[in-house]
Length: 138
Length: 50
Image (cartoon, each protein chain N blue to C red):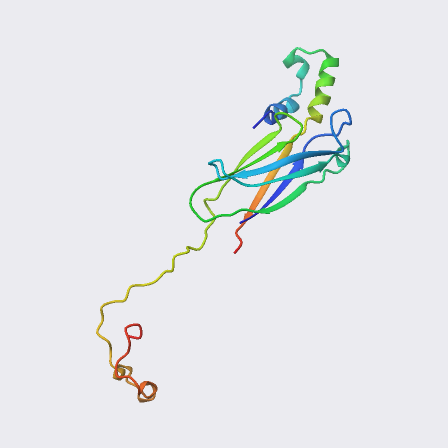
């Protein structure tokens, strides 16, 4: 499953408080403590001076997903600032995956039909080597 | 959620000096600090891949 994340900074730059690049971590776990993905990214503070256009940071990563109803939790936290963390529940309820099981239909208990049930001499001519259809053909 | 929601609501407050009993000078300092606090907005999209 591919996750595209857009992080938009909502603060102004001050050289008194910020570095040239403010680093953050994104950590995704399965809600039961197992970390599925983590990476570091930086928000360049040179675009955060007053009046400048804010440039969002875009991240893309892949997560394993085998179905089930568990929700993943994505946490984004600052490397330097205490209390700058955001926890987001990734809703997986609408994600459908193909089952690994092979789907099949049980055969019905039918009597094999003779070739003559086709009622067409040309078609029957295609099956001269057999007298009855097999269970699937029947 | 850390302090982000608290900072957001303080940013939205129009009269901090009255609410927090601050002098105008202290209010200016606090307003500046609130703008510098690194709040982030996060959006995500999911795409199943084979």
